[in-house]
Image 1 (cartoon, rainbow, N blue to C red):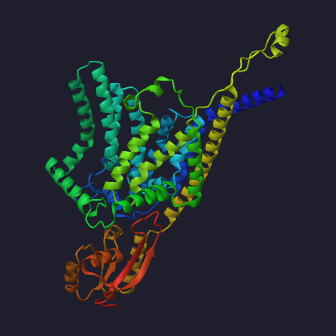
Image 2 (image 1 turned 90 degrees about the horizontal axis):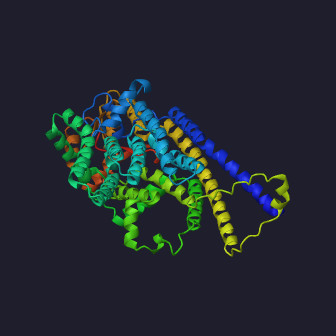
Image 3 (image 1 turned 90 degrees about the vertical axis):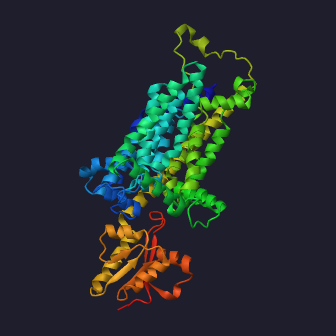
Length: 578
């Protein structure tokens, strides 16, 4: 009797604590997101250290696709947002970073709303913080690039898409098509998530047919809305290039270069990596080691603990009885029903899988930033797995009995024999314990991510990128030998050096024969070249180690600059050294 009363008191206390936690969870989430945003702004990176970053920065000075300010397709909504914040932020780079921080902070709203479809408020808070504090996506928000802004809009699109899948009304269909238009106008490479629109249209057609409504007018309205929201930004870009014909030619040239030469996809020229090695690097290094864990062993261990808790919790979730309608339905019928009303976890996994295939096949695996949309989705899926078993609310306390009935109320009422009651109670206690363990693991991951991500963000703001070090080295060499003309041959570094107005002539040459002719035409110049150019020449002409001598090496963190984290500067031996 005493044990039962003690258990009831503990359950009541636990329930009250859960209620308090649920009430403060939204406010605490908002406060923590504000703290994240403030810290991010104070530790923003002041550098534009890559070709693409310089493209975006120069676009705020003069928007010109032909001059690659920015490069195709123009990212008009991203650039317009930065233009609106330019005066408030100060520099062009800071304008983009401020936009990234604001949009990322606001993305906590759709993440919360998505999580609340399956999770309690405390778990929704954990899901938001798991996503926002992810170190690698945090780093992207601190740079003048469109990944972070695109991911923020993506969360709004996914939330709107889920709502439209639940009730396919025209206001909800219009909202999801509008948000997809905004998403593509911010980050075109996220078009693979358009699979959700195809899915949505398919189930909408099934609805219209089942309701015996006219199909073609509704299809025409859907197509008109989808195309119209894309034309909002496409038409403006076409006008900026003098018309649709010029814009199409520019787009065709960009697509040919992306998929045929420098894009880094499986069809790009010069790719000598096998498909199996590409898959292993994409999944093992880009997605997991770099993207999810930011190359932190401690974060890897904490995430493994969270995954273990998620698997156990999902395994302990109640299953429908064998005699139920859902259990007895045929696989085809269950699949059709799921396609019409997909579960949140399965739907997110399907859309993320579509994008993952696109990133694997068509994006540059040398740049892990292309996998960043997958990171937040994976953290949300882990949270959904951890809380797969819904918590059972304890029985409400009975009202006080009248004085004359107090003695009778204290006598235990006879209970029918239930052989499975003990097993059910033990199963519920196990599920509660697993959810609590999962919450502790999630809190540990969030703490580690905040510490790791905060440290990396501060380091990225303070550490001079390798290409900036190259600029300083060339300036020093030019100052020490003002009477000597120097020419440096480089690859993507040339865009940054021109942006920094490095006082040394720099040329971007891809052909070794043309390089030799250029050197012979300028015999009095000191010829310098970077290791990226040298490797390209050696692929054409064989080893060239006897013709060069290294004079400087510049290094930065490969997590910030995955391709140009190490730059070696060489002097061509046939050029004057004094």
